[in-house]
Image 1 (cartoon, rainbow, N blue to C red):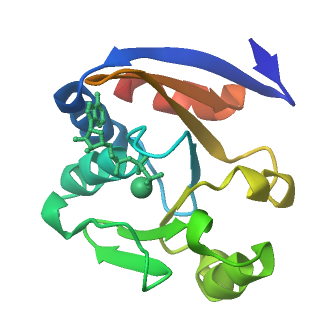
Image 2 (image 1 turned 90 degrees about the vertical axis):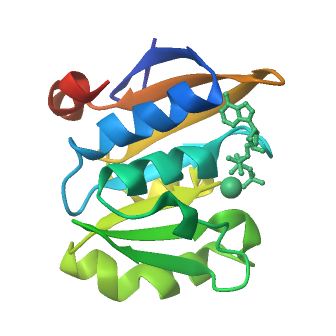
Length: 157
Ligand SMILES: Nc1ncnc2c1ncn2[C@@H]1O[C@H](COP(=O)(O)OP(=O)(O)OP(=O)(O)O)[C@@H](O)[C@H]1O
Ligand SMILES: [Mg+2]
């Protein structure tokens, strides 16, 4: 499957523990400046995946919560993680307002839940991950990235 220059690969149908472990592994292939756009319905596992990433970067995953009131959560781990939930924002402008300074400095990893509306504003280089509810305990996870990024991420999948 291929969309807008990105190739999509299915990473599997995973239970919660497997999804967290995927996040942990994934973390070790991430670089400062990476922008992850997580999509999928409510309860599909986006925040759970962020917990895995944050754990993989050496922080306590318990610190990861939905950035509901704060708009953005910042986790200072081996790398800095900026965690945004676009669902809670009033407009796309608001997302950019929040992220502007950090995006310019490329000094961390950006993770945006419900960020698909932001796709058009970023170049090809975003890392898009889609979560689908399969049953109570399983989620299907798909990754859409450029070939170049896929090469980098492959060993962490
Ligand atoms: N395989 C699984 N992967 C992830 N979460 C699972 C899985 N099976 C069950 N769950 C449960 O589903 C819920 C997932 O919630 P989570 O907050 O990660 O979703 P979300 O996509 O971030 O939702 P929201 O859109 O509200 O932010 C949790 O309660 C978790 O325990
Ligand atoms: Mg969430």
